[in-house]
Image 1 (cartoon, rainbow, N blue to C red):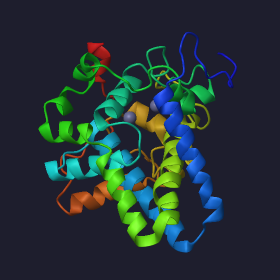
Image 2 (spheres, rainbow, N blue to C red; image 1 turned 90 degrees about the vertical axis):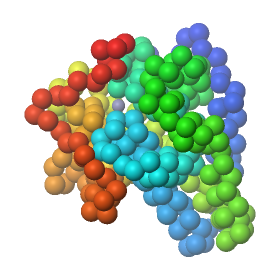
Image 3 (cartoon, rainbow, N blue to C red; image 1 turned 180 degrees about the vertical axis):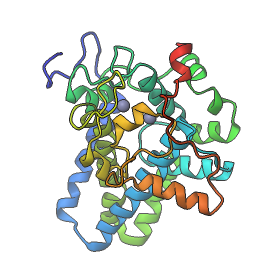
Length: 285
Ligand SMILES: [Zn+2]
Ligand SMILES: [Zn+2]
């Protein structure tokens, strides 16, 4: 294992597009220290729930990456559009990356393997190398289901539209200070908490299941990510819609899926088996 601070992998150069975007969002987000108001805080908290929980955790991760339940198309498109506001690249690339992570967890082929250390899994993989710049052939291999769905292709092609609209909405409601909180700070907060799943939830916490990788159940990350931090459970049963298995493993995204079920929006919900479920991609690779 390399030095944990050495997050520049050998032979990889700076990914300028990502480095500039990540840096500029962080700089604008510093504005929160000069523009506090309860309305602005609410914009961040509610925005983070809509984008981080409904969008990324529930939509991109549990529904579209792992297909842990079935939802009507309108709901797939809505949740994916919300997740686009996370500024974590278009859905096709994000979902391809996450399927690669499960197929090659903590190996050299894992885009954000924990083996080079905390900083690589947290942010290094985003600002160095090719990050999520997957070519067409890679997308065809990992997300064929999204590639043949015209709605999802459209969302991937126009993934910046939702966040641009949200800038307009926050500006109209609360001016530029609300844009700083509801968009820039919310994106930065969402980045780090999502990346904590890749870093902290592969470093610290319990490993009740022998998954053959470094994944852990990390309560701190689970609180910040609406349940996504129960990551050792998740690597054990990737297609389970439920990640928090014990009563004390709070899993907001699972609670929301149960509400969707009551509303008739979530069907064929998959749960953990006694046997570990095979990951089809592992065999295909
Ligand atoms: Zn993982
Ligand atoms: Zn996953």
